[in-house]
Length: 467
Image (cartoon, rainbow, N blue to C red; front, side):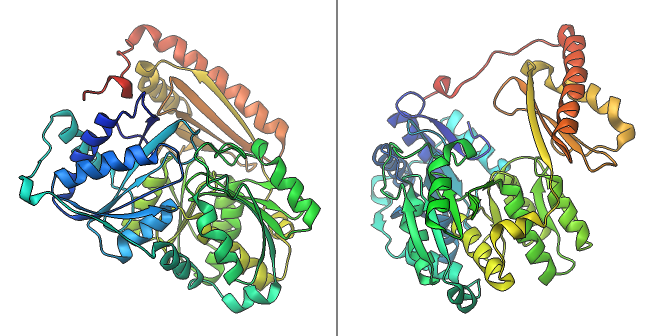
C-alpha cells in the first residue's frame, strides 16, 4: 500500500472516499489518540481527501489540528516544533493533477519508517481499527501561523546580512503549487528581488507539470536570461525539492547543487559525513574525498535518507532529484532551506552560480532500462552480483560499480515496474553510453537464463485493495 513516499493514486479511481477514511482510521489507530497535525498542497481533490482523513482520525480518538495549505517541509517542521504526536500531509508531490496521496509523519516530522508503515498496513488489511465510543471522538481545530514559523526558522540558519548586501535577483517557478506561499516572502526578507512564474495556486497545474525536469523549464530558463537574474529555481508540487537554473540559463541537476552545498558544509564541518542514495552522482563522493570525509550510501528513497541521517546522527543528505536534507534545520527534503543555503554560499564567495558549479568535477550521465518480470528480479540480481564481485560493488540497492577512470554504473530493479534501470556516469558521454550497452547486454542474458526458474506472481494494484 505504501510506496517510497507514502500512498499515492488517481483520485476517485484509486483514492475513493471510503478508502481514504479507512486508511486514516488505520493511521489514527497507530497514533493511539494523539494530537495530529494535518496539511495539504494545492491539489483540487484535497477537500475530499482532507475530509476523509480527518473523519478517520477523529473516529479513532485523535484530535486533528488543520494547518491548511502548506509545503510538506512546513508541516514536517510544525509537527516537531509544536510537539504533535504525529502528522499527515496530503500531497502527491510531483505527480500529475489527477493524483493525490497521503504521507504519514512521526512526531519529529520525518515520515514514518517502513516498519511503522507495516503496522498501519496490517491494521488496514485486518480491519482492526480502534474506533472509540461517541463521547471520545476527537476534535478538529484550526492551526494558524505555521508558514511564518517555518520561514523564520529557515532564515535563522543563514547569514542574513551577508545575503542582503548582495541584493540577489531570483526567478521562482512555483509550479502553481504551495511553494508560492513561503519562498517569495522568504526571499524578500533576505533582501532579494523576486520574479515569479506560475505563482497562482491551482490544483490543475496549468503552468507546467509539477515535476521540475529540464524539459519542463523552458520558461524559467528564458526568464532568467531575459531579466539578468542571478539564478532561477523550480519547485515540485509540494515544495520539498528544487532544481536550479544558473544565470546563463543552464539547468543544473540536483546532485550538482547538492555537491556545492556539501562542499561548503564540509569545509566548515570537518569530519562530518553525508548521506545520499546510490543513484547520486560520483561528484558527491569526489567532494567528500576532497575534505577527507565519507559518503553513507543508501537505497533510493527520501524516507530512507532521513532515517539514515537520524540513525547515524548525520547533518547533511541529498538526492539527485533536487532534494537536500539539512539536519541543523530538519533531516527532510526542504526546497526553501535549499535556496537559503545556495544564497549564503553565493554571498560568502561573491561568485556566480555557474562559476561555483563549474569548479565541481564534470560527469556525463546516460540512463537505460530493460524489461524483467518481477518474479525474476531476485535471481537476476544474484547472478549479477556473482559476476561482478571481484569489482567490490556497492549492493545497498541493486549493484553500483566504480571504475578506476572515475566512471560508474548503477543497476537496480525498479520498485514500481517490471524493469531494471541503469544509470551510467563517466567523464565522456561515449564512455557512459558504452557502459549502458555493455551491462544491458549482460543483464538481458541473465533475464533469459532465469526465465524458466521463476514464476510471475499475480499483480496487486491499489484498485484491488479491500475497503
